[in-house]
Amino acid sequence: MRTTVTNILFCVVLSLAPGTLCAQTYQKLSSLDSWMDRFKTTAAQVRSLQAGFVQSKYVTMLEEKIVSGGTFYFRQPDQISLHYRTPVPYQVVIAGRKMRVVSSGKSESYDLKDNTLTGEMQATLSACMSGNLSGLMNRYNIQVFSGGSLYKIEVTVKPGAQSYGISSVEVILDAKDFSMTKMVIRETSGDYTEYEFSAKKANIPLADSVFALR
Amino acid sequence: MNSLQKKPIFLLPIRCLHCVSLCCVLLLAGCVSLGPFRNPEVRQLSRSALYPPFATGTLQRMDLSVDVAGRHFSGLLLLKPLSDTTFRVVYTSYAGPTLFDMQVSPSGYQVHQCMEELNKKKILGLFARMLSELLLISVPDTFQGGVYSEMVIQGVAKEGTGAVQTTVGHTMIRTGSGGQKTYYWVDQQQQELHAIRIPGFLSGWRFQLLTSEDGLLERVDVRFQSLVGVRMVLTRVAP
Image (cartoon, rainbow over all chains, first blue to last red; front, side):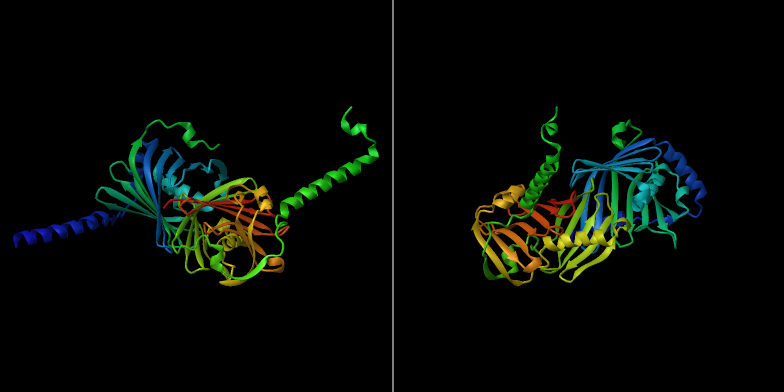
C-alpha cells in the first residue's frame, strides 16, 4: 500500500515538474528607470557574443513546427549574424541598415529601409542585445517582468502604429548577466517563431568575415 | 582589313537578314518541341493518369528558390493538401517570418496572409499560377486526353537537363484543346510525372520534375517563356 502511494506521489511530482519549469511566473516591474540603467550598463559590457540557437517556427494554420538551428553572433553596437546549419545552410548578416542573405551559395544584399518587417526585427533585437530600449519606445509599448533568475521584456505594437506583420516580441533575459536566453516573435497572423540560445560565449574575438556584408 | 570590308557594303543588310533568319529558326526550334507527335490517340483519362506529384495527402516541405532580374531569394514552402485539388501553401523565410499563406483551388487563389513587400497582385498571381500548374489543380478528375505513347521525345531532350533527358519509352499526355493545351510527360513504368509543358510564345511554362530512386519528388525546375531571367527551383527538404 505504502509503495503504491509513493509511486502515485512520484508520478504526480514527475507530471507536475515540467509544467512548473515551463510555466515561469513573472511579476511586472513597476519602475523601469533604474532597471533600464542597469540593463544598459550590464549589456554594454558584452562587446561580442557567440551562441548556439534553435529556431522553432510555429505555423498555426498547418499545426506545423519547423525547427532549424545554427550559430548566432553579435557584436556591438548592431551587428548580428545568424548562420543556419539545419535544415539547409543559410546565413543572415545584419549591420546597421544593411542586410546580406546567403542561400544556395548565392549572396544578396538588401537595404533594410526597403524591408520593413526585417528592419523592425533587427531594431528590436539590437535594442535588446545592447540594452538600449529607449529607441523602441516611440512605436512600441515596453513592459518588463521579473521571475526568479529571469527577466522578461514584452514589446508590443502601440495601438495605431504600423505593425509590419509583427504583433509582439517577447525576450527572456538571464538576470545574472542580462544575456538573451530566448526570444519569441509573434506575427499578426498568429504564427510565431521562438529562438532559444545556448552555449553563450561573451567577449570572444569574432572574425570580421562573420559580419561581412559583401 | 577586317572581314566586313571584303564584301561590297550593299550586301551588309542581306548578311544581317541571314543572321536574323538564323536566330528566328533557332528560336522556333527551341519553342516548338512537339514536332514528332502527330495524330495522338484520344482517350478518356482520369487525373491520376498524370501521377500528381503532391497527392500523398501529407504535408510536404520544399525549398523554393527564386531568381528574378539577377536577384536571388529562397525560403521554405509548405504544401498541405486539403483535398485532391485544394492546397494550403505557406512560404516562410528561413529566418522566421511568413512571406505568404494562400489557398489554391480550381476556383483560384485566396491569400490569407502576405508580407507587405510581396503583397502585389502580379507577384502573388505568378506564385499561384505556378503552384496551380504544378499541383495539377486545373486538371479535371476525368478528361479527354491525347496520348502519345512509347516515342522518343527528341525535342525535349535537347532543351533541358535532369529527368527529361531520359525520354525513351515515356508517354506524353495532352490535356485541353485550342490555345489551352498542356502537355505532360509521364513514366508509366515508374508511375511518375517527369515534365509539364504549357506552350505559348509569351505565356509558355515549363516544369521539369526529378524523382529520387525511392519515389520521392526531389526537385522541380520551373521556367517561364515570357519572363527571361525568372527561374524557380523547388528542392525537397527533409522534415
